[in-house]
Amino acid sequence: MAALNGPQDFLRDRVRVLRQKRDRLVAFLNQCPGLTCVAPEGTFYLLVSCSGAIGKRRPDGSAISTDRDFAAYLLESVDLAVIPGEDFGVSPAIRASYAVSFATLEQAGLRLQRACLALS
Image (cartoon, rainbow, N blue to C red; front, side, top):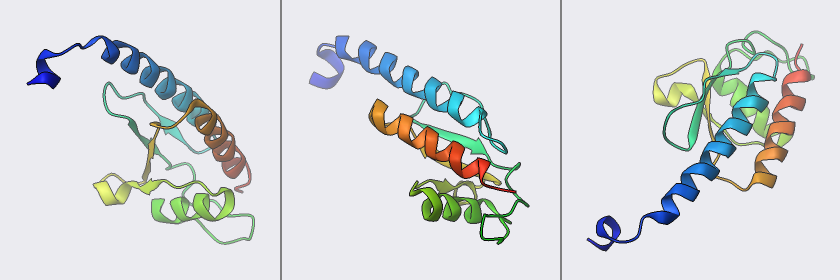
């Protein structure tokens, strides 16, 4: 009852901060070759289409054939953890959280860009 009837002021600030993080990560993602993302209305996750990365090659020459391959590539090449969209019935896509600090978000965005630019 306290959660429902108590003060709610802190929620406005939390929603504002999450929107800022969402918008920043969406902007990073849409600058990455092969990725597209639309900002969701709710949640703190993004579903990102990685269809433009499918069929590309990693710097070592191995092919990216699925969103699972792309997620593994991000983890191995730039130490970035995302979830393959196929785990949610949405493929080719990845799921990424923006419920992190602004500093971590900026670092993740730069890593994503670096990884995508390295594909051929």
